[in-house]
Image (cartoon, rainbow, N blue to C red; front, side):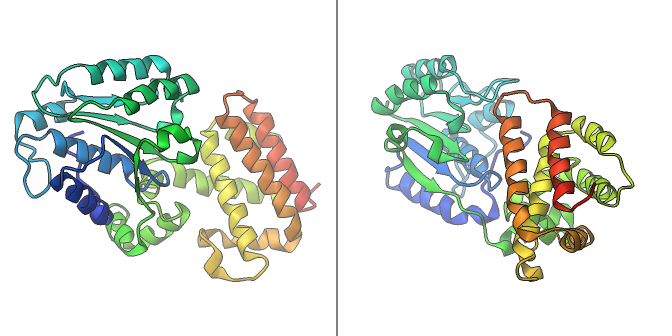
Length: 331
């Protein structure tokens, strides 16, 4: 992190609320930042953490100049503790929470506050979640715990009840589009936001990854399968070697567009207007009702991919494509 985190433009309301709590000395010991992935919850958590540890805040922000800010920028602040899944793991384990509890029990090394950020909170396994309850039940003075959660419904009710919730909603399209235009240009910002369901950071990820290139090539191959100019085995083998979650994301996006568009013909319901050739081709050949089990196939494939079952990727894709072609009566 080259610069201290600051709230995004669309987070002014949440930031003002937090500042009012600090000014009234009512900032809770445990704060739960809730909202969809890609709206900036991590940013506001790190902004608050930097502010709480800063020795000379300026205009309700960390100064960026003091020793504390320098330590945060270097990633070596002794009173800042970050908990997230370790490398090659999607789970926060109980040993990590025990380290957190040990950190909480110790005196601040800088003689001030201590800050903990745990993200994503729903990544804790049951043993880790139960261990965290001890810290929530026995808070220490000047120690602030921020839980960042993309799916707070997965958290233990006992954890949620011990935190004050701060909702981080999807921002209005105007502020998000203005911000994103600085990275993608005005022409593309609207499309990217639609594809990312209005989540600015998810839209930025589409730019910074190869997702948009995947989108173009995958659509071309799917049209080839429908027109029987491409081989099912070859296409499945090709895409099984790529980032499969990205492939399934686009398939789900296009199916969702068709589910919204086909019954009404309303183009305003479509996110990815660039793919109308694909949608029209599918409309000519397929029955609307058959889209639902096809979407179920893609959802199941995404669950299998993210559930740790280590499925055969090529067979998984072949199954999805076979059902897609069956829907369109392509033999």
